[in-house]
Image (cartoon, rainbow, N blue to C red; front, side, top):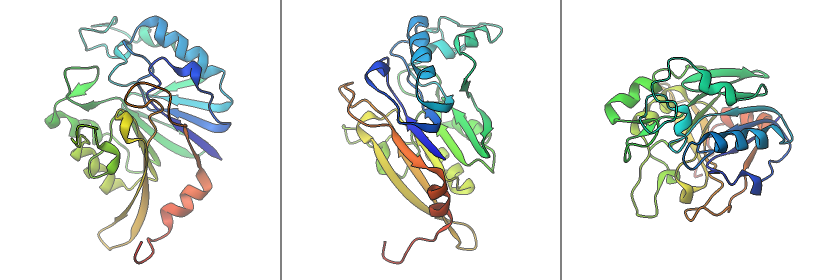
Length: 241
């Protein structure tokens, strides 16, 4: 089984074609301003991609999905009718999970506070969201990165990953944590996390932002073979590596 990850197309999705895969996962920022037209355009494109299952979360640009934000066209909406734009065949996660072909995926759009964008949360509130992640999650998708990784480094030199997300990942030790948000930090970072008895398991961190800092389509979606990933997760880190 192959899984393809991507994030932050920001409305430039028509410049990208996903690799064939069993599951495609988008880590948010499908739009620039969270407008209805932007959301509809992305959904139409996503449904045409050569994949069996489609999973997505929102990001800090995706105001359409944030009913609690005054900039959202759906501010204070009392029901979930704003999600009617999501066609059957696309699974939207918002602090929730889904199991597909035996793979448990949990997703959240929340990110640390930054100029009051969509789904921004203060540091003291973030932990309440990460506590919702199931202990048996195989894949966790968030819009922003965790801390203690090279994948949260901004061009300014600031590292903006979420420490409380790192703490939760350390406890759960999922196979994959995928995110975007920091366009200039695209890549993979494998972490070997020991339990209390010293037994290590590998968690692969993936920053799958497809746009660069200048908002040009510069990076390929990240394709992962699930069976190989499971083997790597269970194998111990070799000495000296």
